[in-house]
Length: 75
Image 1 (cartoon, helix red, strand yellow):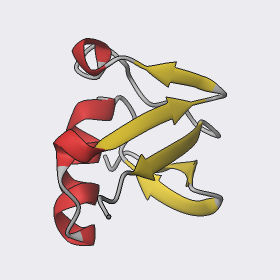
Image 2 (cartoon, one colour):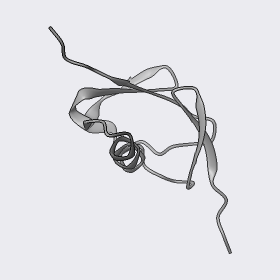
Image 3 (cartoon, helix red, strand yellow):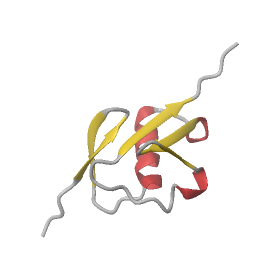
C-alpha cells in the first residue's frame, strides 16, 4: 500500500512531502538542493518563527505554509 504525499507551501509554492515528515528532515533536503546554508536561514511555519531547537520536533501537515528566509552578507 502506498502512502500519498501531502501538499505544503514553501515560500508560496506548492510542494509535496511524505505524511509525517519532520520539518528538520525536509529542510535538510530542501536547503541542500537550493545550495543554501542552514545556519543562515530562519524558518517560519504558519506565521510563527520556528526555533532551531524545535525543527526536529515539528511534523509537517497538509497545507502548512513554510517560509524560508535566507540571510545574505554584504558590505
